[in-house]
Image (cartoon, rainbow, N blue to C red):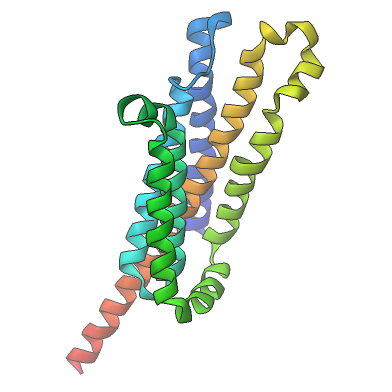
Length: 214
């Protein structure tokens, strides 16, 4: 009970902190706020995606029963990180760099899944029973669906009319803030899975120790 309560308080506190961070640019720059590619909100999206990818890779290494799922999720978040970094890659690498990197990630992931296709169904069923699964689904829906729909230019032009040119930052705040919320839910999912895999690994080590002792 206490662990659930502490986890709830942690997630609530994290979300409150997130909302405060999103508002920093607005408080500092006022009507000059743009929430562009170089804003703190955008940087946090990239940070959450790469941290989530690393946590899923940790789960891949620590739990053999979930390897196909863990690797697929790590690849997905890594691709999302690359996509978030497209402007930097096009500027400092070459035009179309992010597409090339994503293609390589897809090729590697599909090759691994094909070689281990007999384990995919079992791993997917296992993951579907974990709390991480629900958080992940919510996070992906918010990030990839809801934030995109809320950020449609045609919708905001309809609402703001001629003021859209001057108030586009309002649209950016809603879209980028919602997207960051989605990334935080995905991060929570990655944390939940990593915690589960860590506890399972500890239990297996303890079981082996008991067998050795007997």
